[in-house]
Image (cartoon, rainbow, N blue to C red; front, side, top):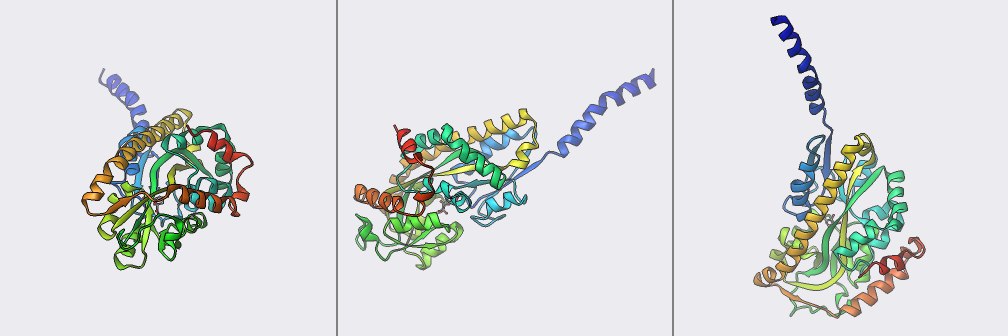
Length: 330
Ligand code: KDO
């Protein structure tokens, strides 16, 4: 009797053992990003994405560009050295120039417009190209916010109403051509610098200013070393939650669906929180003593749009795509 019991104990333990072995073998999805752990995209990933995939994979984020330098993540995924990133259209445009359409100022109108554009069938060939050429799958569009000009000078020292008022201003922009061109289109003198170096750059005066959405200005404490924010809203900025296609393809179809849902849930959660923060933080920044004001928006929009349309970037945009994007704006 004992031996029968023992036998059945062994038998029932077997699937358990193999399950345990499988659990120990769960793939680890490392994500590298310059974002801090308190950035709303990061919070959303921890609260929605990590638990959504926990049954079959381990999410291992590396914040503040501690694993890969800003801008090197796509190549790291392509080479098989990294599984996930929060990439940008500007970084994708380095490899696939058509993505520069999303780096042009005043193209996306708001967060909802970004979602409509990302989900539209006209994005399919672009997403496919990213998979085929970089081995990267774009899972979801994440909302970063409306980028604003944030300068060391007070409004009294420099009032910015039109692009001409930015003449000679050393403006830190992220380090790719599409980003640098946006700085130029704003009328400034753009310089490349990694996100993690901005605070010191502002503090020492190596740069006169930087551009980022209000939640980032607060999260990274740029308000401590700047005196004004000019609400140009020149780019309704997005990021793509990206995963290695190889890592994705190794999952079962149920796991892939669960991972996609976790990505969508994280993007939506982060979007809502970021939108709320964008609204709330004007008061916080004013309290901190910053001048916050709107410039002549048509002057900025016309200048930026004209420069992009006349640039070599626009030559790479798929025919008719800008009209299709504009048609999706409500
Ligand atoms: C930045 O470097 O200014 C930027 O805002 C660019 C974005 O694409 C994004 O990568 C972001 O930095 C980082 O995630 C840090 O918030």
